Image (cartoon, rainbow, N blue to C red; front, side, top):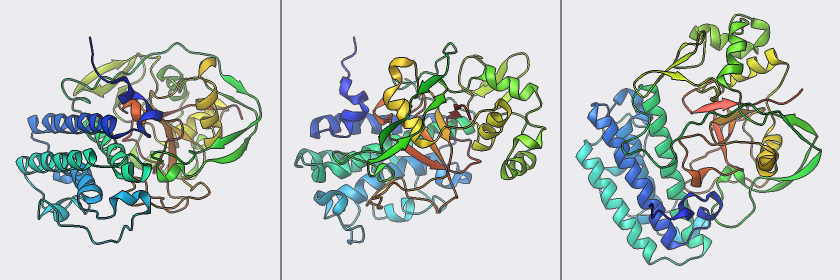
Length: 401
């Protein structure tokens, strides 16, 4: 019988978590980071200097550095997102920490023992300061932000493992790790209505969800499930990767330059889907969501199918209101239409993991994936990535035109 606190998996409650729950969540996230390091260390890939900012040892250390930078070293941490990001920080417990972790991961970094020592030291300081903190949103802001950041690091370590064709989870795996297969369901019709898009004030709110604002959403028909391998194979069999008319100009140029004939890590589509996963070739169930597709591929499939990607308001409305009607999300991140843009009232806050990219330069992923901790699976969550990105555990669903 598990004694794990159920609130650790509650995405709404964790954003308003008090000291005790935050302490448990921070420890759980750090333990997962350390277990990920073991995965890479066993293969001698923890340094992986070619990865730069994706190098596992740098990513792990960065989690500790961000925690220390905004909690242990920031004299205005109790002011929360009103803290001055330019205020001079206190000295680090590790004199080389800023050289190692403040940049892009290409500087000569620490060895594994130094990283582990730094992670232990920063966590001890964080928990001590948390125990003496107040319970207001301002006083807990950076602790909640540090948790969100380290959960994000765990996802990136899983993505890097998939790119290197390693096991995509440490041993023992996190309790939420599961790639489901689901029977096809009929699309869902949503009547025209108004939606408060984004997140309201209160608790921890990521920058790119600020702030909730009313949005008119026209009626639409949206897939109940992300597009499956079975549906995607039909596109490939019909010459989807050979038909320029199905692709936007940038997408066709990308597909030709990459020589892409299938989504990333796919070895075979005809006669069953064979993918590189867990360090070996595995058969993917036809009912599982298609995985590691770029927005270019998602858009090409939609044109072939006479469909389109949902808008952000359509996707969020369905996620918030249509679960009882069969709308399922959280198996894969999902591409939506349009480019990354701020909501009204957006402003960059100290320590944010989601800077706003240049207009038109990034697409948007909504939802979460099978490697996202449940506490980070929030209906308002947004990720900004380039249209050609296939490292995230991403797929898509479609709408009627």
